[in-house]
Image (cartoon, rainbow, N blue to C red):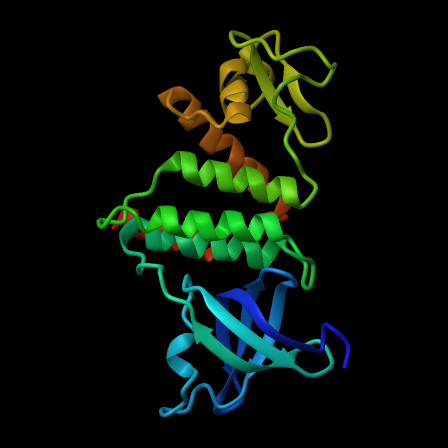
Length: 242
């Protein structure tokens, strides 16, 4: 077997599981050295399965797989511990991150730095017992994700190459980056230069920067998701309405 077809001792997180036939699961994992993988967990749905309780989202695992083809066979999973369970908003945020990775990461494309960013983000989400989420952490991860996928944001200069002016107004065009506006009414979404500079510095202490960065990242994610609505956003919006 090749290196891909037989792997042991691989750090990974479960992103999603879904039933396969009567007793098994297909497990989508984010592994450190191989990226997103689809693995077959045979018999994992049986009541006495030793592996059943390990295949939980947001928990660090060490796994092994073997086989050929698009879906390989999960041979082993061992819990590594050290990650508290997520609750409240942090739990929704965790599922949001997993959806982003499932929809945006190609399979079997290693992103070790992103893996470490994801692990660090989970630790940050678990800090608050009430499950409160710091938006600065979320924006930083979203930015890192786009960077790793080759969609790095231009935030220090505009589409003409001129430095961003903190007091100026801009819109963000996907193929150009920030475009300076003469009048605010020229674009549906407007951000001030300070917001772009704060995003570059990953400084979200300014409330306006937080608000505008959130709106901008939502637009960018929708673009790269090709308009697909994430279930976590839909569910969170429905719960807010209730």
